[in-house]
Length: 225
Length: 249
Ligand code: HEM
Ligand code: FES
Image 1 (cartoon, rainbow over the protein chains, first blue to last red):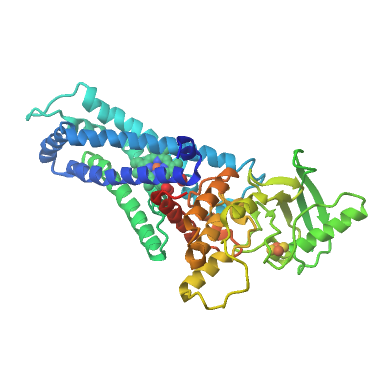
Image 2 (cartoon, protein in one colour; image 1 turned 45 degrees about the vertical axis):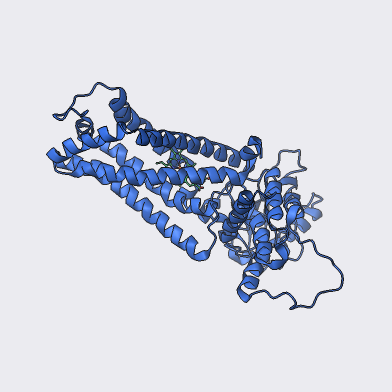
């Protein structure tokens, strides 16, 4: 099968979308669990979080997985762009008056818009933490680890910054509420019971992830009022 | 009852098209939507104007020939109905009703409300069949088929090929239509022989016609006159992925 077929095939496009999406979703679980350390009592959280960050950034296996993750995210975004543009072309000139929206949920139709909100968030997130940690000039704590905890903690004292995070996690929640079960269906889960099961799993996962990520900045903000 | 109609008029596939406004008075509320259009056409003929072209055949919801976008939704504001099964009593006296063709880039407008849906025929021709000798008819029960399989296959086979699923999909995806036939034949022993070849050929044909990717909004099932389930699409994905993994084309 040539590469041109892969780009033209409406089913293979979706397979890439679902596999990359599920991989990123799996990463979210690990990322969330790690970040819950931020909610420990201040002194403990401080040293432990910096130690944890040091561990992650100095482990070759984790580094490799991280680069696979970046590649996955880029494929997911490019494929999303391809699918969205091609589908728009298929719809042609469209209806002059379009009331078809009543037949489906808003978020199932606007995965691209939700994705762009997440992407904008990711750019901010990478700039402030990832770039800072790797290339920024940041202080070290008493154990000699880079004090990324301090930077995170300081940023979550700002209300507007916390608000951006929460909006992004709401968008993420809706993106996942459609994305997860849709991915299973793309992969060919057709049994009626499994369809129901994956729908429950997907929606539960979406709620847990968006709530879980949102309470971290919210709690730190409230603690510091 | 009286209504104002705004009808899409387009001379041929090359011309641009526009809405034309018509007033119809003293309609019987028990008329079907298509009968109302017949009344409009009689009125136009009396006025020496060109009647509005639209498709229909059985007018009882089984042939799939009709299909109009009414007030921005394929087949109007009712779920699970064909255009011929819409009646004027479903509208209010004095309503303005907007009538457009079914839209998708693979459906070219031939004239007015009539669109070319032969792309769907070509998907069927690619694999929507079983190759068997057509000698004398075999004994009805010579091939045992489980009750549930027979029911499932029949549910998929109920598709009337009207194109509503495509027209209601924001991606103009033909996934529901194509998958219904693939699922019907994949469920039955008669379809087993060409199982992998069929799914690949039909998906290729679907793509060649320029239909979009399914993004599982499930709008198609909501509008389908036959309530064909979106689980058919999942089954098509399964069959396609299976054929890919087995390396069969
Ligand atoms: C944390 C980040 C993300 C996760 C966990 C994620 C997860 C997923 C999953 C599981 C799907 C379903 C795939 C399918 O239906 O086959 C999906 C679909 C989609 N994603 Fe993401 N995604 C993320 C970020 C993004 C970003 C940044 C963008 C765009 C800039 C994006 C755009 C899309 C689009 C447009 C779809 C729908 C494609 C379709 O309906 O076929 N996603 N995502
Ligand atoms: S005319 Fe046959 S289904 Fe409407």
